[in-house]
Length: 496
Image (cartoon, rainbow, N blue to C red; front, side, top):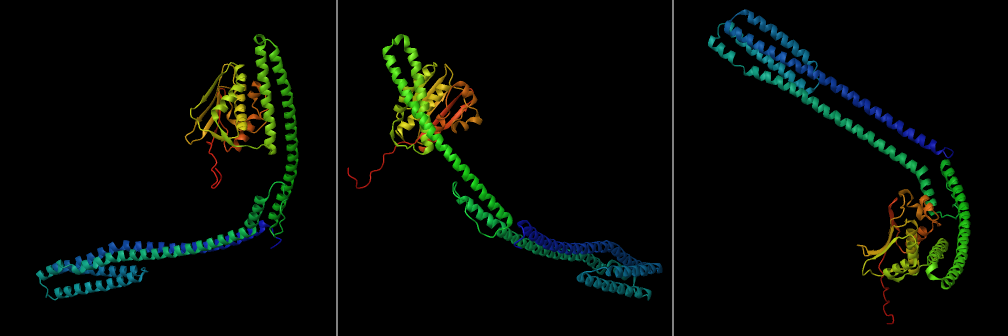
């Protein structure tokens, strides 16, 4: 059996169980069918017997009527008819009795024959007295009216039919009980066979598969697949080998992606750092140029240069921080942060990006907002990213609202809503993946597509989530919620 495949083992076991179950089912069916045929025959015979009883009762009444007619008229033809009816009754009684199968019914039928003989003997006695001239007309009339013995005989015949059906019902119930017992036996055998099959499957298939599942659950990317020396069916061993090869391929791909990721992070950090250095030089030169030029003539140009410098600086900062997050070098310092001043400061720094497009910029901060627990610099970066995106993707003359409010659960919600281009439902999750921009977004403004990914990572580190409500062509609303700041409890016994 060790050389047999898993399919062959299970097939042999299944065929054995099915053959045994089919044999028992066939025996049960044949037994039940034979009993059903017997009951059907008995029912047909009983129905034929019952259908003969009315004719027999009619003959019995005819015998009584002929006897009464003779006693009243003393005419011999009534005796001839009576004798013929008696012979006919006894012939039918004998024939019908031969078909009875129930003992109680047979005994009652024989008793009925003796009661008939008693009735006939009684009538014969009266007829003999009449023939001898010892029976008066009045007494003959009285005997003709006295039908108690006849009525009792007829009633016994009626009870005999009911007795037959009662016997059939008893036999039917017994056959049903036997069929149920047979069904229970076959069902028990089937359950036992199913249990044996399940145990066999568990032993030869489920057990090794579960152990393979445990190995897969404990395996970690970058680690070798554990060795398995157990004796398992060939198919399971082949599956284990395939899993081992797949794990090796995944480890090789993982190492390549790790190297690529490290190179990308280093490249992004280096480029962002040099980009920031160049922007710092440009910003200094722009400040000196602004001081030496005439404000009334060059103000629009200075404002344009300042907006673009800030936009480029925000992009460089996002790239640098995204590289730090991916490499695990971005640490949060949670502290008490007042939300309204932070939002106002971010809006003051970036409002120049919106004024260039003549946007309606609003700050809607609910009064008496509680302080929140956050990293102020990281939170400012998230708000700046959301504001910058709204300014970039909102057409001239649109509206951008930065606000904060208290949610029913006590958290403070910060939101940025605009009347910009909006985001299609199928692209809402993609824009958070990093380095992804929608086609309409690419046509509307420039960028790297990292701001939302960076913002989501920062908010995840805060235990919050970046939520989006958007309708294509009508605008978007980004929001997140932060927990209120709770002062750390003082350690008992600490110095005041």
